[in-house]
Image (cartoon, rainbow, N blue to C red; front, side):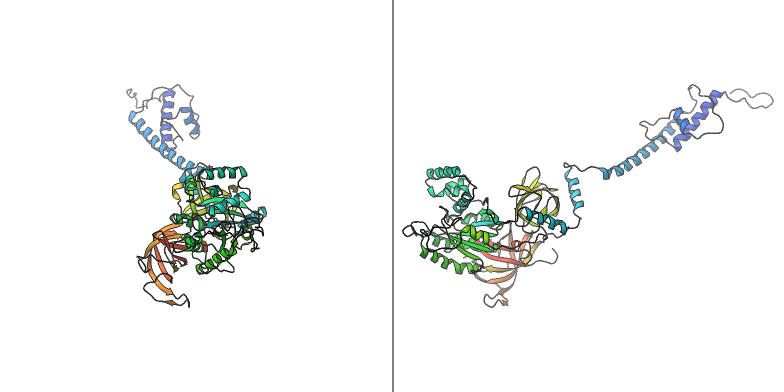
Length: 582
């Protein structure tokens, strides 16, 4: 610095350019500490014009702008100021990012290809809406206006080789489901296999193994219509090795057609001990089939026909032999049973009445007339939705199949898959292979759902209402009728293990408490330690895994069950009581 002037006078002021430069540097440092720039990519000192725009106006006029000259500020102070500015800018960026996230969250559009977690969250959010009874009735009335006909599932049951598949094929041929050219093709195939009378069964038995052996393995499905109703045929296997498949089919049925072969020796074989005529009739009643139509088939067979006419003596013999047994199974002979003589191979008395020259002693209704007039229970459309899942597969989403046992389902409904309590949304509804906006109870449905993968559902699960879900229990109290226990295990008591069949569920179970036996005549309870074949009792059954069931009083089709042991049906029962906390 220059030496002080003589006389103690202060030094002269610096030149204007230096003063302006010092003042500008000081303002920049203050501005970086108080009001940092909004989003600097790299923390740096703002340019002089921007600083001049943001600083408050002063009363003194500013000197004119001078060209930049190197400043004499310290490098340490510049680094500290830059570091402070960077921290402040980072904090500001974090606050702005958080605010942007909050602002944009509700505006995110819903797309069909959202991740599974986001889709599940959407479905869960929509599941809290209350049930609109008016909307349900409006959809139900619209469905009835489009097609007021009821839908019935008809299962064909009976002993092996009684003519079940032949009857199903004949019905499809008579209703136009199969053309004559296809029938002629099946006739040639059957003749090549030396099975001329099997060609009608080929319509239902599409598997080559079934055609070669002449035995139905899987439950065949077909549809036909009359002026009064729509029907789905369930052709159940008759062989004892495939009884679990028959149970799966009968669990979906509203009406059962018990096919009896009147040929000499075949009726006796099916009805004797161990025959499938007995077991199928018992299982059908257990699985919720209220009405039973008994068709006496093959009356035109040479072993029973008399000079080309159907034998009334053979028909009466079969009716008298079956009626007491079916009454024991729980059928009312006057209300629940109907006997019809038919010839499934030639279609006599199936759609058109048989001529008097062939059967002069019968003037009752045909099979079609009986089906159109049979009484079935009415289902309440506003009841909580229930659909036991029979099968699932993948087709542009997760598809589930089953029969809706209660309630009405609509497109866009949010439902719950039990027992895993997964909320799903109905994206598409198919009934009778046609897409629909809604479906009432009693229909065979295929639903496309979102919010669940194929591995999240399984056979035996139940698709149900969220507001009133199906009970999930691992133990229940029931009323049992013991049919016939095994020879080497003739005592039914606590600890007895067997296999439980209830709607589409197959689960191992154990008797954990024998509450009491029931006297078959007086219906009075009595304390016992065990029961034998033919007895009735009330007991408590426990499963290894929790299952979805209803009491018989609330929903009969999901409250009936069968106990099987070593391939034989040992007991039939109904659920009477569930735990309070389920």
